[in-house]
Length: 161
Image 1 (cartoon, rainbow, N blue to C red):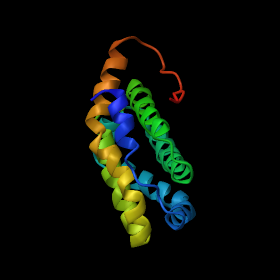
Image 2 (image 1 turned 30 degrees about the horizontal axis):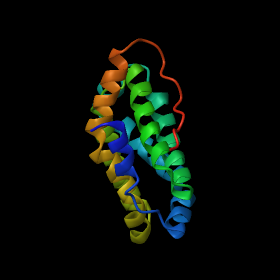
Image 3 (image 1 turned 135 degrees about the vertical axis):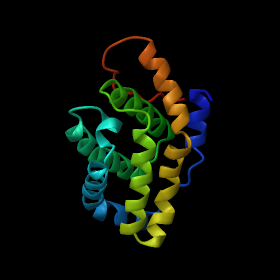
């Protein structure tokens, strides 16, 4: 899969309904706190995130759910794909392991399923499923980026066209 195919697959996602977006936003902070609580309670958390990264995990929980909420309001496939790729590069460069994301996304989905209405969950789930399904592509792209040189990755700039 190349980046254009990844972006095209994101473009196939259906828009999240306004009602689901409102429900999600109303519960977002509580869901982020619960996501962090569950991830930090895992016995393998330090292996997943590397030493000294617990605060970064908590920031990731808040930022991911905030970012997804903004996408639900104004969906841009390029932004979803480029941001996911940036997150993988940036967090891996800080010691997060590739096994973190399946654990994190599965836990995220469980929290969403528990805290959102059934209708809201059904509307938002495909966006998280897209992240889960494309995890191998994110790993592949971030492997390439991390092997190409040291340093902090730059913030993504969406390419339109």
